[in-house]
View 1 (cartoon, rainbow, N blue to C red):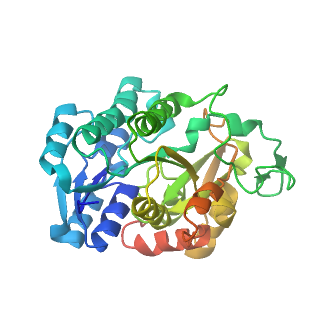
View 2 (tube, helix red, strand yellow; view 1 turned 90 degrees about the vertical axis):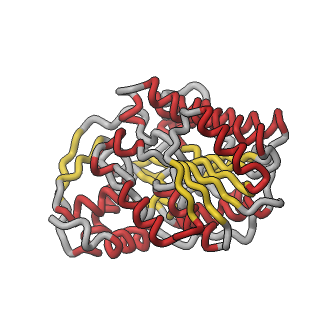
Length: 357
């Protein structure tokens, strides 16, 4: 690989900013593409401007920012043509990330998630086709099929029977068909399959990472997106958190942005073609909503304020734990390092000056 430049879209977001710091820390130059669409999606709470300011200060000259919208085909072509052979890696994180929001503006959602990803793939194919291309997809590509699993109600969570094949985590053999996806899930499926197709059809080293709850202190916590960060924010600011359905016992596995980006680095160092990985905290790092609040209360010493809405959100998973077995077979040196209590504690420490009642 001749280049030394990493292109990161959504560079001011959670995974994007972690990627910028990580690869700049390895001595590479990072070109960021981000136009703060999160501010448009989620209002002031969701804006990533604060993160961009922090990033620019921390990373300094190693980081160059471009305020390009990934729907701008010509803008992306021009960027990649200018960078040419200097590109070593592309990490595509920019997205409309909320399934609630997507239903309000389906065209915007599809244009950003599906068409934006195609724009990126084509710009890379025309200018640097041999470069590893990493796409952050989502477990929502499986739709609500996980909800048909034979779940058992326990005191604080739903759980699979221990003899079930996916007790240790759902793997990539789960079907993406015959299920309700949400509009967001469908736009991400289109992008996910296109990334695989560019790998197979054009022999490009592309990879799809299907994340569940991606989290970390770089999250702009908003109600519609950012589960653990928003839990901690609500407890610290004494906001009321609305729990939607499943008695608050729905289970999520959570992966820290640092652990995800170290998986990106492993792929970058030994790329493969058209790979798909379920990526999350697995059995090492997961919790229900009820359990998350209990941990947050213990860390902060503040009682959580919640109310319960009996209607679950459309397409929401009642139980999701990922299996990372396939990724670990390909990259045996990679390990998860953050579990849920460690993630919540770090959020508390990082935001003490920011999130006050």
